[in-house]
Amino acid sequence: MQAIITVVGQDKVGIVAGVSTKLAAMHINILDISQTIMEGSFTMMLLGGLPEDADFKAVQQALTDFGTQQDLTIRIQRQEIFDAMSSL
Image (tube, rainbow, N blue to C red; front, side, top):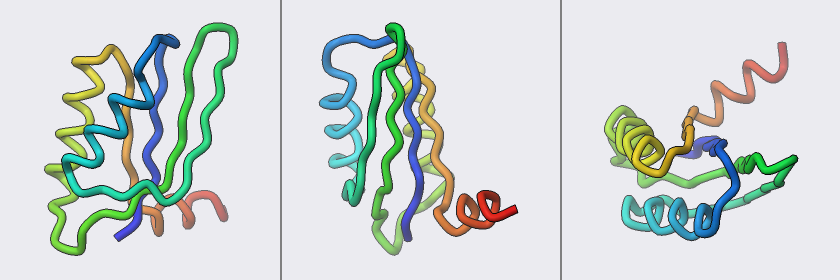
C-alpha cells in the first residue's frame, strides 16, 4: 500500500530526521519526498510504502500523535484516494 504523507509546522532543526526515524520504526519506506520552507514554515510531502499488513488507522493515529508531540501537523492519505481527489 502506498500513501501520501504531509508534514507542516514551524521550521526547526530535526524535522526530517524525526519524521524519517518514526517512519522507519513503522517499516514505512520513503519512495519520494519534497520539502520547502516558506517564511519560517516547513512543509513536506512524501510518498510512503507501507507494509501490506499495515493497519492504516493505527499508522494514522501514530503519526498524528507523533506530530502533536513535535508541534507538527502530520496527515496521511492512501495514494489511490489522493489520486482520485486530485483528478476531480
